[in-house]
Every structure is written in structure tokens, then in C-alpha cells.
Image (cartoon, rainbow, N blue to C red):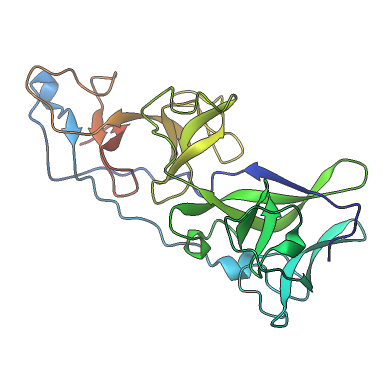
Length: 260
């Protein structure tokens, strides 16, 4: 069980969003300007395989994601030992993921108490460990007695689909956050606001400003990828770019991309 002096902290992390750039497609809107199509609705590209979460969990007696190594009435959770977070078996409770809690001992195995609810544990951004409507998007930090915190090599599943990356006001009730793509399958959620602008270098530690995605390590503007009437303006501000919907993007969302 966690020592009385321990506390939990969580922070957002945008996993694996330095997406490879790609082009092509099959459904184009004719465009007179230099022959550059305005929209490509089927850019393909596929979706990357999920990470092997159990192999990315922190070390210790058990596995955070699978609960292997613990007994039937125990739960694998981080414990503070020698200034480090170590996976140890502790008491499990009866509350399931999504139920209100005050301590992790109230939660069933495979979950812990964070932000007032039992949250499903996952590792390395492995979204396959999460319930429907959630993704493995927050990193867990174990609090130290001096008020600082350390990484536990443990992540948590939190709700996604809570906002729209094309709506600049969809996270207005969460100051300091913008709607971002938070996993490689195109899930959207309010996350800490980034500062990297169009064309700037980006990563999960240096996210982009609102309305952008980190593609190939650079901030790329997002756009509305739908069929256009002849008199509608181009979705991308740069006339050399096409709004391409890739498999990794949410429905009706594309990336402003140079295409051959």
C-alpha cells in the first residue's frame, strides 16, 4: 500500500503524436488554382499499431496494466521506496473504473484513485487497455513528502471525444487547455495548451497551439475535410496546401499538406 505521506499527481501527455507525413488519396475536389486540389477525403496512411503496454510499465513485483504478480484480492500500484516509485501489490477495493473514490485502496485491481475517481491503469500510451470512450493519455506521478513528484512509469485512462479540434472554444471551460489530438487513433480531448506554431518543431513535451497537430515533428494546421461547393473557400490558408483527411484523423478533420 502507498505510504501515508504519498500522494498522486497526474499530467497530460500526448503519446506518439509525432506522426509521419504522408500524402496521396482518392477523393479530390477539383481546384482551378495551379491544379492544387482543395480537399482530399481519403488520404489513407493507416493507423499505427498500439504500443505493447505491459512491457512499458515500471518495474517491481507486479505489472500495473495486467496486475500479474498479485493475488486475487490485491492490486498492483506504485509505492514509494528509497525515493523511487516501485510496483508493489497492495489491497484492492470494490469500486470500478469511473466510480468516485478518495483513496486507491477503494478501487478494484487494475485501477487507482485519481482526480476523485477510480481510473484504469495503462502503460506507454497503450489505448487498448482503456474502456470505451477513454484513452491512455495521462502520466501518473507519485508525490514525495517535500511536495515534488516523480515519474512512476504508469499512465491512466481518461475520457476522450470531449471536444473538437476545429472549435477554438470547445475547451473554454478548462482554462489553459485546448482541444488536441491525444492519441494516434485521432481521439480528441482538452489538454494543456501548447506554444509551438505552424511549422515549428513539436513533441509530446512541446505541443502545438490550438488547431494544429504534431506531424513529422512539425506543427501542421488542421482543417475541415468535407466536400466543398464550387464557391466555397479553400480550407487551408496556404494555397499550395491541400486539406487531407488521413486514417489517423477524426471524422471531417484533415491536415494541411503539400501533395504531389
